[in-house]
Image 1 (cartoon, protein in one colour):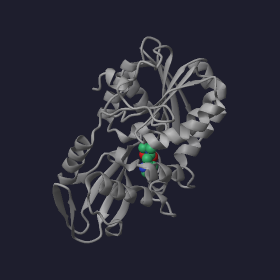
Image 2: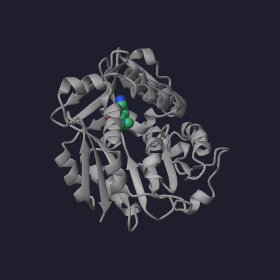
Image 3: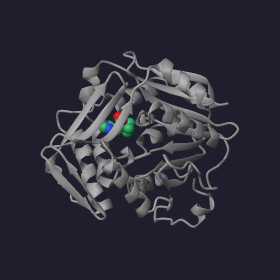
Length: 329
Ligand code: AVJ
């Protein structure tokens, strides 16, 4: 865990973004190398989000097959008054994985947060997104934070302790396996303070064909998002991955209630990087992401186990996606 003082020593960009300097290049290289040398090889999903990866994810959200963003937005639109009532005005809105901040900004008129704290690992992307939002909403105090929140939820002193609302939309919680999700929710619960709460989006279990298409779209945007990881690895590791040597694979596993995303070698090859190498047989894969799906009931139980209560739930007519508000107990 990162001590709070590190933030005072951290750099501030032109756009007033707090950068967490904790994740140094050596740590990142060691973590990536360990995953690439494992059998099967894997990388953490956060590495999908370099500047181009964040843009490709924005494009994914516009795809006809990718229903989560659209469905979640429709649930917010249809239930805005009830959600605003559950949340209350004047919250400290802490946006986990804010990206372009669009989801939170759409809630500003109804929620009227006192402070907005977007957090994203893709710091430059966040800084660029936040600049025009600051001038559009001059009355809302804004503190952008470039941070890998999967490893630390320690927030700088400038983030108010009062009425904290952790906003975790888009079913990003699905990147964690259920046991890790419970542990992460517990850490959010701990960071909530006395009167904190959570507003979270959860993708629900549905027909496999719909899930498969959402993660393997006809335009190939999700394939580009997945393959772009190789460019990012080349930069981070000094590796020589060739995008053309790899195939995008994504499919729903009903047994594990999760989408699995992989990169599959099209031929046998050896990848080299500074300080290491690995042989991949033809068809061998790098596991790049999991996206777990829940039933509403199973997620309510998870929230309860993590120390949340007074849970309220909103869904769409098809029951494809859910938004839940939960109070820290
Ligand atoms: C950002 C983790 C919610 O799992 O649906 C989209 C990421 N990966 N298409 C998801 C993603 C491939 C997305 N989350």
